Length: 335
Ligand code: PEP
Ligand code: MN
Image (cartoon, rainbow, N blue to C red):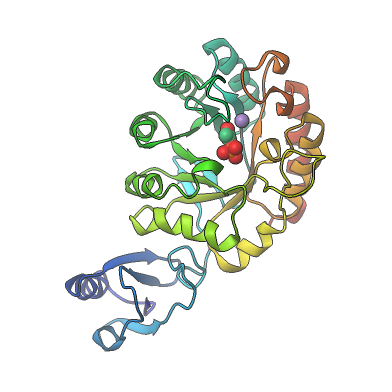
């Protein structure tokens, strides 16, 4: 259930509703909006009776939520969620490009890439210190040393750092160093990790599971939000299909489908989906055209020597070209 407060409801009226929700053993999630505050209720397994709330002062209406997910839904929040870190923004008016290395391999490789990313006016830098690799023999990432290199990038270029936490001990570290905690496709249904990310107080970038439905994706985001972390960014990164001309099939139809049901921002990853440099720019353009809030893109100074995902990494000049093109497209389609 969702309690919608009147436009002029006071702080103490909101607090009273929260207290009543908690007194019957449930969790209250107040979400202030531009016009009104809505308070989501979680923790109930069956339908709730509205009578304890309906007549409280300041309450406009009690809405039964029909979908299995609540906090991620448009019913909960009619305006879009914008993630703000200092003066950097995702989900607002600007189209946000998160770019960088697949894996942090060395300080020189990371700094060289960050210089180009910052030079194009981007505000977010990606780079993995903990890598989820298919093979146990593949490069697994530099761990905390990689996080320290990323912290150096923030220091030197003012870029906000997006980096993956592959498990709970990694999340403890990532939370200390990063600005945005990434949860990868293989962990989209790692429920204990999602809950742990929900306890963090930093935005979480959640990638869609490579074989998950929209409802499973929404419920994964709901895990994070149900713990009280409402700063979630969704990412479409391709799904498994019969197609063998591409690493994964980028499901661009997800973006308008998500828009209809959720207030959360959604970005597109043309790198991990295609797996191949030549396909990245066309699909980055498509991501901007379909109305995504931004992109997540791999770039590398020397892709042929990359320790991870070299074939999909853009060369610096390709990246610069891509940024110019997607900004032009986003300028046409964005709000
Ligand atoms: C990544 O972004 O580095 C990554 C491993 O992506 P995914 O989880 O989508 O495979
Ligand atoms: Mn990668």
